Image (cartoon, rainbow over all chains, first blue to last red; front, top):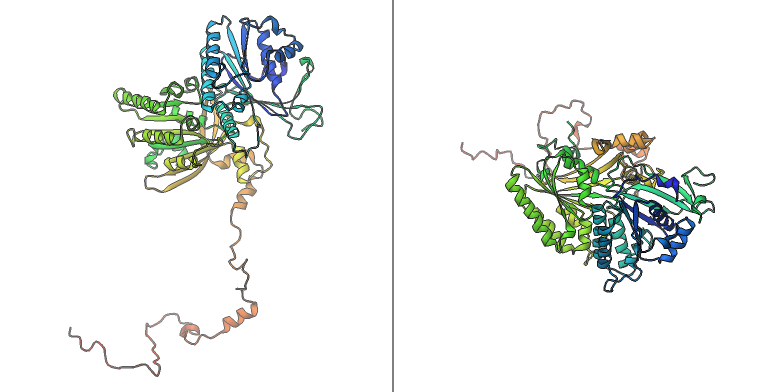
Length: 245
Length: 326
């Protein structure tokens, strides 16, 4: 777990977090961080819906973080929903997935639940109708609020140029804008402004979202270098590492 | 008393000056860097109206947490299949209010138009807005939240923002202070960190309001914000106060704005319209043959007309009015 960044976002239940990343500053480490945090919390269970990765990929990373996902899989503690084969007209579609989420939350005996959607950009790539994506996302956010659960959604920020006018790029821009205007906390990973360096992988920012009502939250900016062993991962306040802007 | 429109919009202080500002459509715009919601919350909490909020982006819980003692009802757009059903629901709420809270003014807030335009066609959304405006016209105010940075894709490439702006009586754009200064060219080197989005310190509003007379009012004002009991409270301030805060050499900018020299119209011509010193001397010495007062220092005239007939002129000494009998 990454202790330096754990205390940035207030520790209350029922919050919504949007994670945005880029090709050169991937935020998978954050997804694994929140997954690990929930696994280690005895009073919390987790619902992980993956649109791009399979269970083995999370399992191997979590092993290095000291968590054995095998013992939790298919138990109430860890609900993994494989949504890789999702399609608007197929057996796995957003309506079915939402029904699964609803059932799992209704039956949960844990004090709190964290729902992770990783990553929602995939729905745009397969040209899932945008209004159905928005409906699904809104319903997930609403049900999380009803059950006082945390919801974490990941979306890529850069899927093309700003000037692209193809339907996928336009839908992506609209979806990103919609999410940025609906979530309480926005975590972004970006490449370094000044270029590439071996010591730092990127920039990690915690910003206030439009719907944040916790006015004592302090936005933060870090430079980071992630190691397979979390104990060796580093987070620096911007400007405090020599030679890096 | 502060006569700014923004002050009136939030606090209702200048009703006489802005008579038509309490009805019609307000297009409340914001950007990805700065939300308009802090301004809107202050409007809601300062005006004793009844608010019907169409929630398409934010959940009702956000309004529950943010609104103090304001009277309001949230309608979730997601609960309805068509925009017509949403319209009917809003009309029912207004109708019920007329019965139970007859004296309370109604305000409809749409959060946000962008998402409505994704879910429904632009024609349906524009008709919806028009029909909202027709509900008890001149009594109801409609506030449309519009996110400026979101691309709206319309079938016929219609510039939807222009259409919405022209439908609105009042257009308000809320911008991040630093971004505003950068756009004005007042501070190219101003660093704006990604974590500064949705600042809870201040922001700048650009307003365009159509007065009752049809005259357009333009205004740029700022607000500063403080947090009291976990609620954002704004005060309207002039932009210069923020310039003092963020731009160290703001005085130079103000001085630059003042015109220091007259514009010379002959500056960029391809032909010469100027006179040399010698030409000016000759011009001043030129005697104008018909200008009698040129040498005469006595500027008072008798009113006498000097007529010098030419050879061809017919000069008749007789009084032309001699045949008049009065």
